[in-house]
Amino acid sequence: MVTIVTVAVLVPVAWYGFVASAVFTLLHTAEEVWTGDGAPFWGYYRRHFGHGIGNIAGALLFSGLALALIGLAISGYLCGSQFFLGGLIGARVGDSVLSHIGLRVQFVEPNPGLATAPLYLVEAAVVPCVLPVSTVGVALGFGAFALFWFTSFVRRRT
Image (cartoon, rainbow, N blue to C red; front, side, top):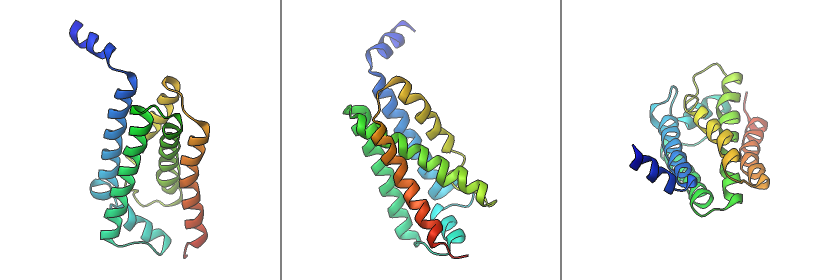
């Protein structure tokens, strides 16, 4: 026990944040793409908005989004960038609130990603209490999701 505690004290808190963040990203992406109710997410999107992308493009897009989030986590947690860590936190809140919780309120159909969205909110609530984050980064991360969903609702075919 002492050895574990000693090792834990020697490891920077940001490293734990990175590992948790990467695991959250992989779990959330797996739910959106394969395991979630109503998966894949791009099919859910197409059903509600009348347009969208095919399966190959969707798989590539969501893989790219996961890699982008992990890249933000590397830059924020491991490289110490407050801006990129803020961007990650803003993206987490935007994804959870706008892509999953908000759409679940709007549409009664199961939302792939809703079950793991709270993991993102936990990260977004805890990290700013422990590590400095850029408010501009948070705004830009959230804003990317807000712009996407605003545009989607404007273009929505009813």
